[in-house]
Image (cartoon, rainbow, N blue to C red; front, side):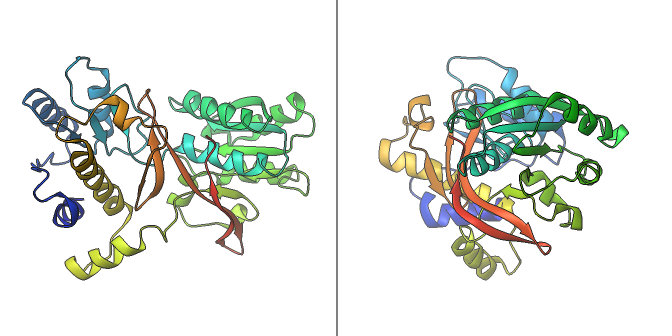
Length: 312
């Protein structure tokens, strides 16, 4: 991320921004301290922290003059003025549901790993489906402890003939719940399975076959990735894209609006922004929404179904 920020400064930021870099040492408490210091000592924008507990702590703080925070923590859901930069499972699930609903499917089931993000996933999916006149018939939280068997059994008694089942597995592997679904003949010709970006944190398994997933487009990051590899002589990952985009975004705002342009109105522009991770926009609740490609898992690989789906 540091190298990506330096590259973005060289490309766009020099002469517009002063970038101060602080080392959190991977410690959430220290990251919180550094973030609060940045917020209270005149920073126009804070990029980071990368530690989830620190981002959650900052989101609980209030203050009318607090600068915007572009949080880089994984699985952060956002807060007012503290924006979740990275693709969330909620947004991936919503975009995947939209991709299926756009084809005419109307009745959906959400199987979501029990935990704090379940309500965020449910809300985003329901909102996404409403755009297409589709409905979320039921949300069933499941525990990794029982392998999802009970949730799949409950689904059969609660919903008659759903068009699609969305599986938001959170931190856990989706394999157990996928095995339970397969035992019921799902996916089938009339019932699709929709996964999320969290599935792809693990190798693609045979049980993924036939599932649909909305996730970031690696081709979007191509130009930045190539230049990064040439400059630093190592292979970039998605962290590079996120860090580059946030420095580029602040430089773009400073250039277009000036040093006082980092307002809610600018950052929450419904038209959004395009970066190396694609088209994204920030919401008033701090969550982000992304337009991304829609894929189907075929023979152990992601096959492009549609170039863009968003759920907003």
